[in-house]
Length: 155
Image (cartoon, rainbow, N blue to C red; front, top):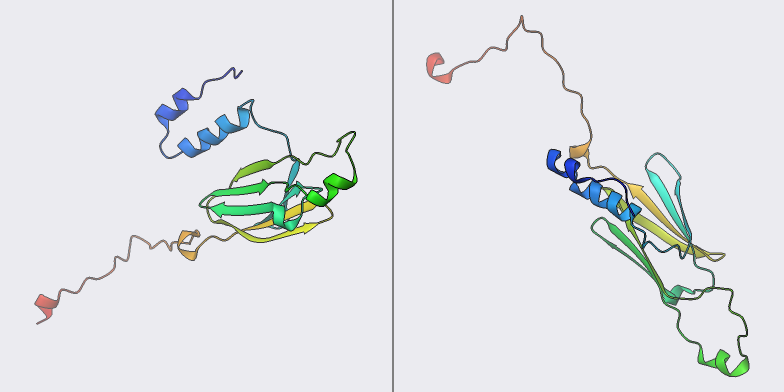
């Protein structure tokens, strides 16, 4: 149960509703802990999400990037050949289906995904367009105002 209320912030801010929705999601008690994952910063604008997916193959995993959401799903397909050979007495290696959803910041794009040693690595890069990057504005002195030439007076 949450002991704080974000309602006053909703009333006094404009455009931050997505931020407060993310805070609500983080504090919710229903977030599953399977499978475990790491989020690493590998460069100034580069990130890597590593998800522990031991026992899953390439065909059982899917990665979907849509707008600002990255969804990683894993669904174990039943192998009919293994059912006849052995019976599992204790299952300590989790092989249940999962879905992990990550909210991505603006201009973050998925560049690569690889599966190695039971870890699914998803590489992300933040590419800010030139129009959105900060630019320096020169400051003119007030003593020399630019001259405006009126075409009708010159004629």
